[in-house]
Length: 369
Image (cartoon, rainbow, N blue to C red):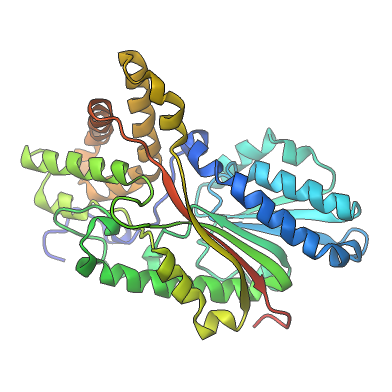
């Protein structure tokens, strides 16, 4: 495309990834476990007789779609495993972590994890996108789980021009009329996701999704972080530090669908043929860090600490997009961008709450197709 010469062809459609620090600053993401665990344990209780009747050594397979390094689901999975073992102590457990992240981060995490010390628990990391098929899992997954992952769009199947905009760096910043193409892309991706999961879950298996969502206005996940980052990039352009082309190319390829958009898609015949909806609810989880330090914001040192932490949170999931948009000669601006972001959080402290849709789906009985 004209004016895009500085971005190599293989980088124009890229797979966004988290920094290695992501799981260490994900307290808000993990806070949703308080609402997820009861739902999964209730499901396990509903299939108690089936679990109790599974043969000795049979594998109970749990898959985490969009796992990053696996840290965020570790406590949740430990609770699930202990409950399963209360019902049938003889079952083997296989945990499958699926993500595009570098497996070395998972390997380091797993080595020191209490999960790895539990009896007869096996873990596998598969470095692929959760939008891809996993024939090796066909018909064997008892619980499929995904949290804070399905807002990422499949960049490998997107037009190169989709993730470009002259002023916004994310789809939810656009006016409603401009979001249409992202909504359609999100729908295509989710249809693929449900199709592939229908092939992997056993009949009666659970698919539990803790999806980030938009509740309207600025009530979408970490909106203050996205907006401040947009303003920092635009200011660099106004200062002549980055080009117009770079400003257009800095775009985070995700979309936070509304609860109505999610519900409408789940109600489509192609999804209902394979899954029955058992639970659907939207909620807001407050920013863990802002809530913890709110009463200390008058203290400049505490306020600085919070601002730096919030900037690190944003950097964890946005840095790969920033680097793709910048030309090689401007790669050194990355640290400055997040330093300026921290200054904005210091000047006007704003938390990064996450809005969620919790969705429980049960796979229909029958042979996966």
